[in-house]
Image 1 (cartoon, rainbow, N blue to C red):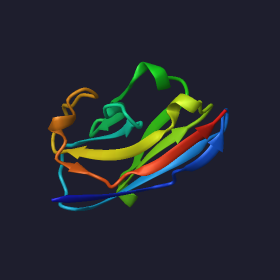
Image 2 (cartoon, helix red, strand yellow):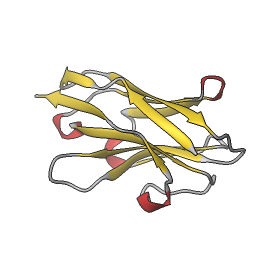
Image 3 (cartoon, rainbow, N blue to C red):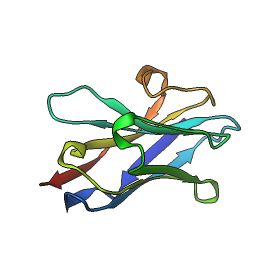
Length: 124
């Protein structure tokens, strides 16, 4: 079992930056995939960015060149650096874990562990 705890959300003005963190604890795996997902009010949860054991990253088109996903294996922490934030980035952000290096932004049901979420609010 993997437990995930997100932090770093907050309120910023458009054009600002935030860095989200996701601390992982529990079982360890030699092969895995972790990602950031978000859900805005009245909308379905969507994939934002994922990274796997090999360091391969995938981003949804709307955040490319603005967001960067990274991981610090020594600290068991996943990060999402968000720059040039837009009001449409406002959502609850969740990190998720899959015990397989092959994963997708679209197959949310593949992820076996989820954090409780951290709110990001971007004002115009």
